[in-house]
Length: 597
Image (cartoon, rainbow, N blue to C red):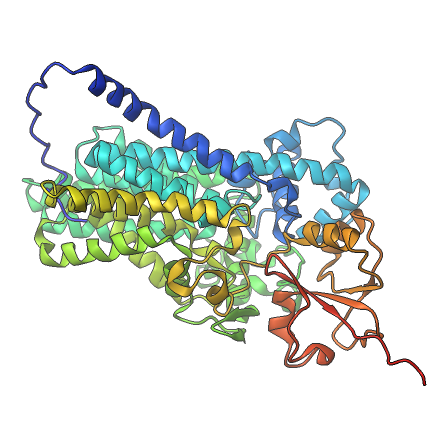
């Protein structure tokens, strides 16, 4: 992860000797390899993606995206900013005959969950097809992420590091998994990588005058994709001050006054553009309101806000500390969204970690998840890179400082969160770790250039990432690396982000093929109930206190069982399931009653 200072251009290479025919073929192979890897990544993401049932979150994301194209009223975009949803919903918006989202009765309350439910139940088969089309757009964003990682690594470090970074991203099972669903998690990883990458190019001083523009646009994209994107603003300011104080990168050789003056001016310009981007993404809807009007405005009513009885902003928004007459140059929905995320985090969320159901977040959750959900190659190369960096701290290049500091500070922020809802919330860190691992591979390769066996071992380690993807396919969400024994050990640590409801279709197929009747099933939610009834498999509802009769079958999601087994489902305690559907749905056979003598 160390190397020469990025502000010092590498010396030009000596003229190469005329290439032999085999070397010409090798050059063509090297040129085509990135395209082949990207195509392979897209193929892996499409492998069985239509067999995965819609997850709970996807309906809300799709409905929000469609609403963005249909109306200038941004009232639904509080849980998530609109950019990723709007882009992913393009093929949905282009379909003719879509009902107008504002025509549903819960529109006035801005209850996105109920609006989405109203939309899908009017024609579920059509809505389901629209969702699959939106998933394809997320896949394209995942390919764009891998492509940018290759470009960025090549720009700083050359072909060898770029190809390694591309493999580590394109074949990472967790990145592939999140690239198959219509959510903001993969787009957030893309936007964060763009922002970090362009900030690093700006900070290096080698990218020219346009680097300030591309950096600012990328930060804006991150801020209107997910609220966690706003964390990049103080992180970049902190790193920028550090580089200006030490005279690194673009500030090298400049007087202190000029360094900090230039940084301050660029921060100001970036801040103004960021405000414009946020307002533009929200179509300037309800922006520039006074603090008094913001606090008095009717609040969207949904699961989190209902308990506050129109006073959520007064308890969780930072605007409450501002003068009442002050006008805030941000859309009301964006401000409410930040406050609602704070409120949701304050209340915690039921999850599962280290064999226990938890409500309040565990500080070790995201470090452990990043350790066990990344392929072995990424983890080992990161450890090696950290060792190299500790030996040569002063020679760490600007781009490594930017990438490493951002990853660590984002992780520190996530470790304080109470929302331990799977690795997906740490997705912005995943590509940053991949490029740092690729830099480690590049440095190790350079240090061992005369040792052919070591070179082959390093190349094989990176290539093993593709094997991790193939072994996980097509159930990528359930991937755990070999350090925890794969799925056998991983599911003792986490189940929330792995059982996302995607295996409902597989359960329906098994129930039909094996005539599983009578079936008692906990569908978890109303949107998931519609999905189950879409398959036409008869069932009876199975609740916490339901006593299934002898001879019946019970289907229960692993997440439901593991988070409620201490107070529910007494008839199943201590039993191993008779059948497991992709590790995520448990099927139990209730023994028949003994025959009457």
